[in-house]
Length: 282
Image (cartoon, rainbow, N blue to C red; front, side, top):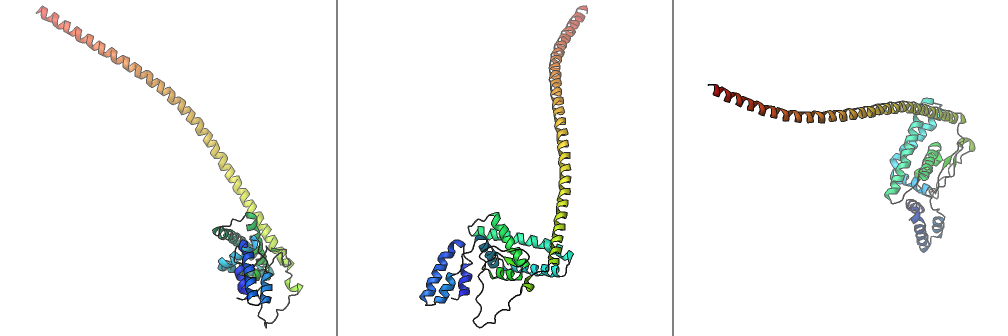
């Protein structure tokens, strides 16, 4: 097993499993009399939770990560050419994709029985933003061996620890980068910040208008509710009065019915007497 194989395996593990697995690989290398490999493996640092989450993205969501890093290339190109509309569009897209990937890393961690907090997810988003701003950081994140969170201040990556790939023994050395080659175009960066600020202000104004409209709707609904409550009370009073009148009418009807029956009985008795009198005359 090569150093790269061991590193890939270790940085794909839960941080709680890292130290034990590293110790086992060091022991195995020593048993194979490969002290150089054992020493290199022993130097591998345990990743923080944020480093582990970024590595999960590299391993479990490689296509999503590639799409994000391609977006970073487009952003850098837009900054070099001072393309305001492209910067605004790509900045919005960047924010959405970064938030989505950070959230997905939390979901992957949860599926493995590990709960992560909002602070860790924010640091994951910060690291992904650093990868978008700097090509070297992007390459390190894609490798999937990040140890700690990364940040970007405008002059290259800061705070990112990563385990790099072992280069082939006879591979040509990479050409060193000069400070000039890594320093970004400050004008382009300033234009990007201005575009982001303008977009943020527009978003605030949009939300302010929505709050105003929703507040007006709330006040209107509350006023209508108050009117309906008053109307319900009035109707309840009318109903109570109507029920009292109904009961009075019912009592009156009952008394009138008794009077009718008594009068009908008296009428029949009077008619009977008339008949008897007429018979007596005959």
